[in-house]
Amino acid sequence: MASPAPLLHCSPRILSLRCSSSSSSASHSNLNSNCCNNSINNCNFNINNRITSSLSSSSSSSSSNSCSSSRSCSASSSSSGDYQRGHHWNLIGFSGIKNIWRNQRLRAYAMSTTQGNLASPKGIVNSKDEPEHLLVLVHGILASPSDWIYFEAELKRRLGRKFLIYASSCNTYTKTFTGIDGAGKRLADEVMQVVKKTESLRKISFLAHSLGGLFARYAVAMLYKPKNSIDQLNEDDSSPNAKAKTLYSSNSGSIAGLEPINFITLATPHLGVRGRKQLPFLLGVPFLEKIAPPLAPIFVGRTGSQLFLTDGKPNRPPLLLRMASDCEDGKFISALGAFRCRILYANVSYDHMVGWRTSSIRREKELVKPPQRSLDGYKHVVDVEYCPPVSSEGPHFPPEAAKAKEAAQNAPNAQNTLEYHEIMEEEMIRGLQQLGWKKVDVSFHSAFWPFFAHNNIHVKNEWFHNAGAGVVFHVSDSINQQEREYESSSYISASL
Image (cartoon, rainbow, N blue to C red; front, side):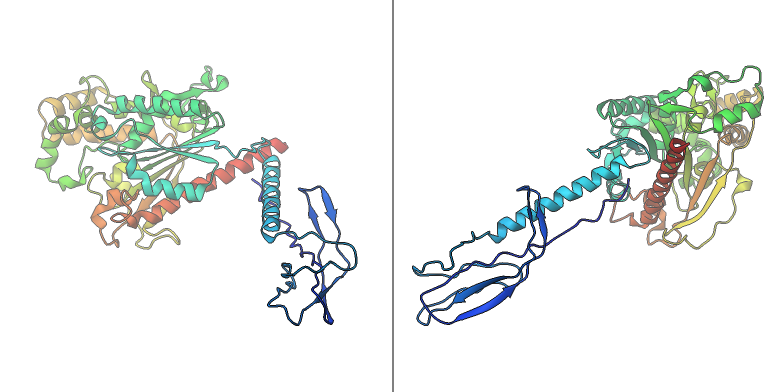
């Protein structure tokens, strides 16, 4: 949007009233007046002459008020004297003048703002300044929209009125135990209701924390609609490179009928929580990691079995593996590929809920010691890496994976559990790496309460988790950067 034009302000000088009293010698005072336009009365006052007023003071009068040199003139208290020299001027109250010029300034500001919208590169007149970009906030397990209070306030302050920031409320507290698929469908329905109520929306983005990132991944697959030309992949060319071009290309479809822009997750277990130190509060103890998968469904329902990759029958791939591909359940990878930007924020350490490897979609050997120093202006954000897409045929569920899954379900032990996890992790990474990701590493090692890293990363509570303010700033600046790039590309396309 073009910036508002500078306001033209002209301070009128009030006409001096000729007033007189009984008798005395005259004292003269000159008053210069500036030129100003009064649009309300549709009159043009061109005051360039010096107006001389004679004011006689009485030797016996009790008190008299004098005229102001630049702002106002109040009539002196007179007894019963007659006005001299014929023509009389009406007194204009200072408060009335002030209101007139304030209204004129507001009208000028409104005109300049409207002109800015008319000249915007989008070529769309939006004089009402309605939101056009929906940003959906999705909370994690056993949480509620109140977790986003600080984050939402900062986003509104930094992103402006063009964004409609909506904190999802359909999966609060124990509803997060009903399964990733069930929560994802509820989220998709909720987003559609918001879109239907706001006709001015044209773009959509998602920002999710922890388990909410998996809910969002499932929901966007339910909301995804491919373009006609993209829906029909080149039947003659079914090579991985041809499929990759389709998946990686921007504007390859819509989400809830809107153009997808950003998909951002904060400490989300994209690879599940099975495996060594993937659920950090188990401390990597083999015995605890052995008994955790069968106990998880007891405490957190279907969601627990899905996170530990033990859901479904032994011969059926777990849900998280299916969500790393396009399958009969939904076009999960195509939906993610439709977004112009995908960003992963991951805690390097001190996160008791989600490990660094699963939240950043990395293999164990790809984890390197991060820098200790924060990026300028973003405290505790230590590294940013862009990982380009890797062409592959996508994930598979080989027969040995089915055997390992059956063993992990029926007779879990350290050996078969590790074998099954290694197979699943590699296949999920292969599927998700078909897309390009920006990976942002966060380290709260120098924070006052570093062990609150899982809640610090999205500032769940402003008083206890404010160490994550730098992450909030980095997220908002990343969204603003994408918005500027989108506007620039739209302007260039319109010019061509």
